[in-house]
Image (tube, rainbow, N blue to C red; front, side, top):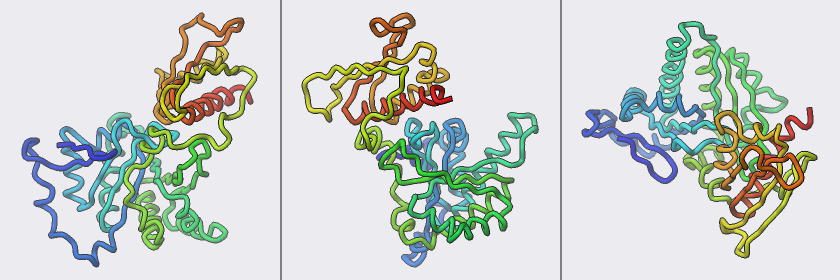
Amino acid sequence: MAMEKGGECEYNSSTEGGLQEHKSQSPPPPSSDNEENKISLKFLLSNAEAGSIIGKGGSTISDFQSRSGARIQLSRNNEFFPGTMDRIVTASGPIDDVLEAVDLILNKLLDESYVDNGGDVDPRSKVRLVVPNSSCGGIIGKGGAVIKSFIEDSGASIKILPQDDNFPGLHDRLVIVIGTLGEQMRAVKLILHKLAKDAHYVQNMNVPFPYAAAYAGMNYGPPNGVGGRFPNIRYHQNKMESNSEERNNSVTIGVADERIGLVLGRNGRSVMEISQLSGARIKISDRGDFMSGTSERKVTITGSERAISIAESMISKKVATVSDR
């Protein structure tokens, strides 16, 4: 049975679902010495991949927990890593158990890719680890020595993405590992052992899923207010009397009709993502309903000032990707 607690999904077995209780198959609670050897690893999966790993009634994830000995948690299906539409998976336990859980998950996804694509699949795939910015220096090493040794040892490609400045308050970066399953697992093992020696990582690794609380709660705004303003965007602001932190401010911006698709995204994906990450409500006018005297569609953003600022900045950046070409 799936149970949701405080921003995370935790899957436990239940007799109602016909599954065996995971705890009954686990060894006795570890001693305090073993507790010190526990580690957590976060990585990203798409919603579809997450569903596959959970399985019907939580059967697959319960099986993986039983076989690996690790605890596996997922963020809720509407709580994504900032700037993506992907959920956060956390595997926790002794290092060997965590690695076994990751291996089971990646193996299943790889097998399903072969089935879905008729066996025509590149054996080299990608896994995205979530690592605190403060711990990335240890993975890189002086002059890049450590990451170079990991690449040579594992045979995988390892790339640490720069911190995303679009999301102030985000202190994690993505570490991209590309290779065959064996290469990926060797690289993940090297990285995990390195992180286990990082006192800051160990102290903060159990913070569950802070992203939804941070961005849906609108605790952050762009460092310089609204992002850069572009020629094809005009701003018209109408504010109601109230505390600016409450969800009752409204801003209407004009976006060129030919570029409104950038804001909407395929099947509305982009506008949904902007709304999700900013915490603002976004409404786009119908075709032919333009700002007075222009051919610009109306985009009305409602929320706190901070939420509006984040949404405005994200929309501006979407449109700028074409404007700057």
